Length: 212
Image (cartoon, rainbow, N blue to C red):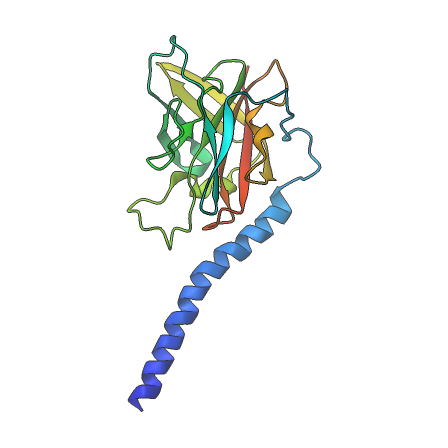
């Protein structure tokens, strides 16, 4: 009787763990079909020539953008903050000109700064909350819940800027053209994280534009 009961308990635990992994993945697949407009040119950053100083570094099965560019001398702050009310993200610190996203979201060196013409490119980790070993889940785990028209507030050097989400796109991890803005005149902010939840086979690109 006892061995049978133990087997049932272990089976139940196995099913529970499997569902914790499978359900978010199924939800993600449903979300991608409904939320991503693969034909939208609006959220498809175009290559404006070569992305200078940026390469792709493969660490195991993870591909990351690495930039050799340095922050300009006129930038006096080492962090800026973003807030996304719709996702309950408040004053999230973004490291300036950093290739290291292990400690938190970071702005890719050589990309634009808040308020500037060009594209502020910010990357951050994502994971399944159930499987995260961190005390606080990575803030970009909720990024797939963002919607077109949502506001992103950026506070940098005492100034506040408001960006409006124009759309979302799913790309290959080595699609380096997403670093560039969609055009040469606009002021954009791009947020990037890994999808599906708990995996890093694709990248979610959230493109927003400065509200004038």
